Length: 169
Image 1: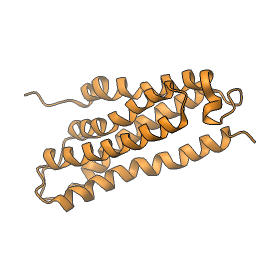
Image 2 (image 1 turned 180 degrees about the vertical axis):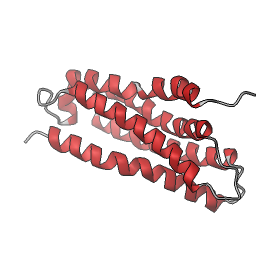
Image 3 (image 1 turned 45 degrees about the vertical axis):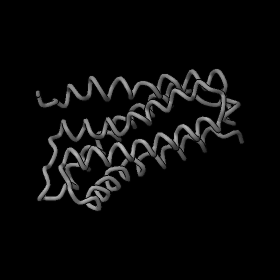
Image 4 (image 1 turned 90 degrees about the vertical axis):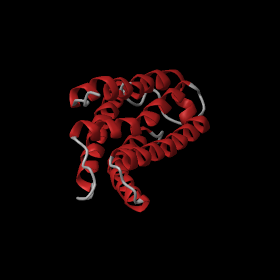
């Protein structure tokens, strides 16, 4: 079996999935922004979509880097390409949950996104345990939460800034 390359993982996994939210954001916001209690004319949704796209790429790269940093010395440290593949597989449910933006329902969006986070955490944990060949579940959980927290730290202030700037005042 061929080892994945970073460019291969990026072009086949990261880029196609990471484009889903930036495509869905302008479509949903121009169609039914009022459902999300946002002012449709108050923002340039294309710039927000671009910001989200860049943040997605940074988050996946940061999670992959954290996977490599937090792997214990006695475990099998993943290559950069493997770490990127693990991070991309974990992010895929979150990217896919952006399709729910097509449904004009804030409740559906929240539920889909929370479910996507649960699936992403589970996928990340299983991949870490299997790819790094960890027998210790606590160690696998520690690496999972350390890697996932990097993305949460990046996204939390970004979402706060976006929603504060967009909320009708």
